[in-house]
Each structure stands twice: as C-alpha cells, then as structure tokens.
Length: 331
Image 1 (cartoon, one colour):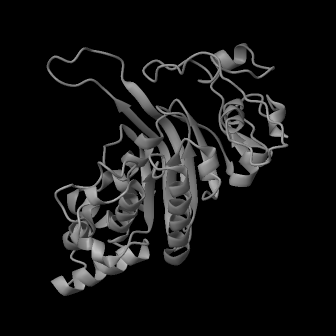
Image 2 (image 1 turned 90 degrees about the horizontal axis):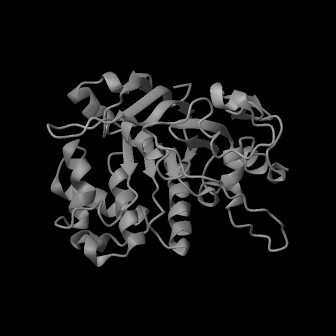
C-alpha cells in the first residue's frame, strides 16, 4: 500500500472531573488539535516537557483512552469509529511499549505467559508447542535467553524487563508501535542498548514507531523526523538533522540547548526559560509559549494571534517570527 501508515488530524483529548463529589473545574486540555503522519518504516519522535500531552497522544491513538474529537486513520481505517471486534483485530497491528518496565509486567505471570498473552488472544499458535516455540524465538530476538520464559519479572533488571515488554509487543506481529518513553527509566548505558535493539527490529521487520520522549539526545539516535509539543500543540516539526541543526521555534532552541555537547571544545549557551509552565486547564491566548518566550521580536501579535504551523527553512514552525532565530544556537 502507498501513502502514510498513520494519519492523525486535529486530535483533541480533554480530561474532565467526573463523579458525584468532583469539583467543577475547567477541563485539562492535554491535546488540543494535533495533526501528523507516520510513514511505513519511519520513526516520528514526539518530544516536549512533562505535561505537554505527548503520552496522551500515543495512548489515544491506540484507543487506550477515548479522544474528545479528531480523526486517526491507520492503513485507511478510521480508528476512532471502530467497534469492539474490528478494533480488536486492528490492535494486532498497533502495539505499545510502556515507560516503566517494573509496573507494565504482571508480577504473577511468568515471562513466557506474558509474552504469549497476545498470541493466545489472537489465536496465532495452533498448539502449546507452537506457542512455546514462538515465545522462545521472540525472547531470542530481543537478546534474552529462551530459558527465561519460566521465570518471573522480579528476577530481571530494568533493561531486561523492557526487552520482555518489547517481545510482548512484537508477539502479535504489529506494523506500528507507540514507544511511550521506553528508555527514560533506564540507566544511560542500558538506554543505548534498547535504542539499538529498536532500530535493529525496525530494519528487520519494517516497523513504524511513534517514539515519545523528553530528551532530544535520545531521539536523535532513532528518529527520522521530530515533532515538538508544547501545551497540547505541535509547535515545530522537521527531519531530525534539520531540526537539530537549525531549530526555528524558540522553545525548540531552549530544549536543544539542554542537550549535552559531545565535543568538549564546543561552546553552547544554555537557555533557561523564565516562569512556570502554564496550566493546560487555562492555556494562554495567542501563542501558548509567549509567557516564557525570549524572542527579540515578540510582540502584541504573539499574545493575541495563534501562530499556525508553516514552512520555514525546511521545518514547519508555529512562530510568527520563525524566519529570525531567537538564539544563535540555531546556526
């Protein structure tokens, strides 16, 4: 099939207080009109501060939670319109790897049973022997000894548990995986191993990833494109090398300034944003970043007019003054 694997249009996810005794408060506008595409065999990284809405995007796309509005098409199917049985069939093609390898595995299930769960649900093995063979092959593929199938999650390190989570996601032969901060809970040395594993699996299986992270140093190793989120909006998106070498939105420049520079002789000024992140229940009018913006050209227009994503030097940036970098970091 030609065309993108996943198309998301104007996705909105608001959280409201519910229950008899819940106080009436403004909804939390976690995702507020997000659009993007993911190609076949491509990794799109979604980055931003905690609370920007990136995990809500990933979980809503695969229907772990329901959208407020918007549309998502996977291989041409409207995900949000699917009823129970068609959605169950689609979930074979869409999986998720969670952030915390300690809480995402059932401590009462053996590793083999956890990996085999999807195989059983979707009836991908005809016999117990075939299921056992598939589990052994999956564990071996993610770099674990097949004999680990009889052991329990508490017997493994965080990196090993995340490999088990990856094997579980692969068990139903998906085409698309949401990687929800899959390495943020791991040691730096282990992070690189898991990133390399995900890249190898992508090459072998032709997988597409939505890779959610807050660290640009991590996503530069795996992403083909990067989309930067701030307060429920995508404010810049570009091919990875373009965004890292020539960021156009002030917020992207601030994020990039925090990335450690591998060359000790290189000089890079750290951009420290002033003020606190505004509440997603009451985001600022106009450009949502204007309360913390340091662009020398910022004006009343920023406070009153919402900037749209538009082409600027190979990127799409939602800044009225993106043609003029806010920091020499961009060059």
